[in-house]
Amino acid sequence: MANLMDRFPAIEDLERRAKRRLPHFSWEYLASGTGDESAMHRNRSALLDVELLPQLMKGVIEPDTRTTLFGVEHAAPIGVAPFGMSGLIWPGADQALARTARARGFPHVLSTVATTTPEDVGPLAGDMGWFQLYPPREDALRSDLLDRVEGAAYRTLVITADVPKGSRRERQRKAHIRVPPKITPRLMWQSFTHPAWSMAMVRNGIPRFRTIERYIDGASLTAVAGFVGASLGGSLSFDYVAEVRARWTGNIVVKGILDPADARRSIDVGADAVWVSNHGGRQLEASPAAISCLPAIATEIGDEVPVLFDSGVRSGADVARAISLGADFVFAGRPFYFGLGALGADGAGHAYEILYDGLLNVMHQTGCVRPAELRERTG
Ligand SMILES: Cc1cc2nc3c(=O)[nH]c(=O)nc-3n(C[C@H](O)[C@H](O)[C@H](O)COP(=O)(O)O)c2cc1C
Image 1 (cartoon, rainbow, N blue to C red):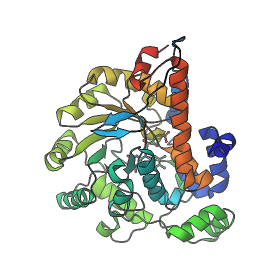
Image 2: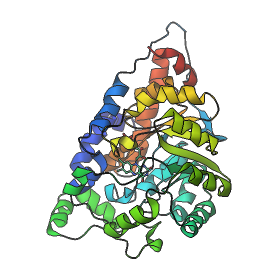
Image 3: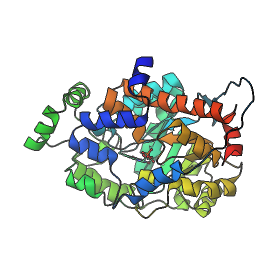
Image 4: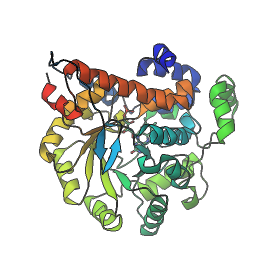
């Protein structure tokens, strides 16, 4: 592990290697935002501006990152965010992430539009498994999906609020992304020149939307895009969350919140946690940086329910920054996939290790024994 840390000490090191090892369409899907991508860049620049004031001369301290969320102890307040079409980025991604999450003690969130199913991944993730719901319009479909998720022993449901409609994602259009991949000379060439990805695809099979394909006629990307638009998109309201609340006995998290009023209403209809996020800058280029929205939401919510956070986190210092501004738990999306792209299945654990080790070090540097003490260290 030490050798791996010497070669790839930062998420940016994994990012550079992943860019070389992934086919162009796969990289574009992973790395792009929407529109002029200003929201995606703002996520980074606003995080980098958050300062932590060290408190020194405390003698030997032993920071303890363990964090209990929904009654489950985690090694640190760090988790992996849900990714649709995960197997297109790295074939077998969710299986690798779920196994690592269970072994290391961090939450893994499986997307509705992942390329594997809750039945397959639930047992791998154990009590570290959460499921992300793009809300089906049809009652029967919703009911069937929730039954399956419950049957796979998931206890935490993440309802994604920030996709009222698909966004434009210009770079993805230009990269001709298709699921399942269409065998064209362009694809053959991209695969031939990226053998690590191609071998992973041979081992794991062609990526398909395995969770939802049974509800769709034809599981091509076009069919799924139509299905998502017609059956999953635009259906979400606070009443809808209340209906799911009446049906789902486990925890409910509402993801994609930026406005304190939306956070308040989510709690009013029964959310057990609010997840501050701008979808990694993939929905609205004019959106504020998610970190800029965090303090007002944390103030609005106080200690009523946990506040979760993602969008732009690339280091343990960023995890600490988000906690200092009010997050109880911090998620990263792309960093874990940079890890997979760079190193294959082992990259999931290495990306986690970079974030974890970085958080631990920042706690030492700032004199914090518990993550919550970072709140007192805002510069
Ligand atoms: C390739 C990709 C696919 C994503 N798919 C989903 C999804 O299916 N459901 C969801 O709620 N969020 C999805 N997101 C958003 C992530 O869960 C998360 O909010 C975002 O990646 C955090 O930003 P970061 O990548 O800068 O860490 C996706 C993001 C990316 C980059």
